[in-house]
Length: 124
Image (tube, rainbow, N blue to C red; front, top):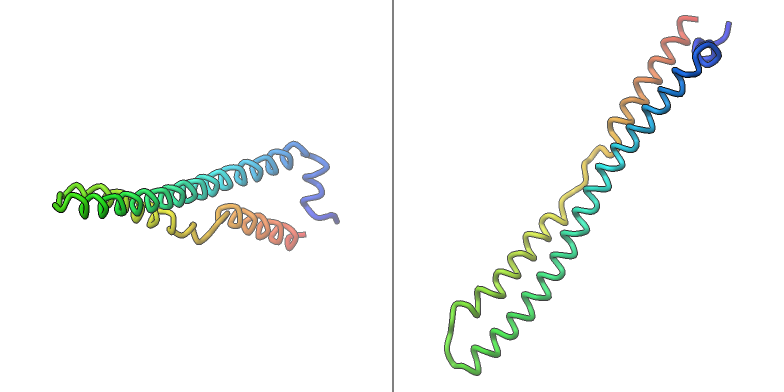
């Protein structure tokens, strides 16, 4: 006797196509979520680099102004400090780990289907 999956393939190919379409949708959803995470990290990395450059540049300008003016003003610390703070916060976001289980739901679905196929094969 043939495996039960073969009889389903012959008798109801629409069910198999629907099942494969479900897999495709699951892959699309999980890839989209992963792409969003990667884009977020990339944007945060660029923001961290730009913040660092702006912070270092404004810190250099603040030192030059402080030396030439001979007086200290809190703005000379606040402007570079705020840019460096943005840089540090963006770096923290950029360094966040990706989810440990990438495509976890897809793997779980594959495992469930494999168990179902083994169970159906054992019944024959």
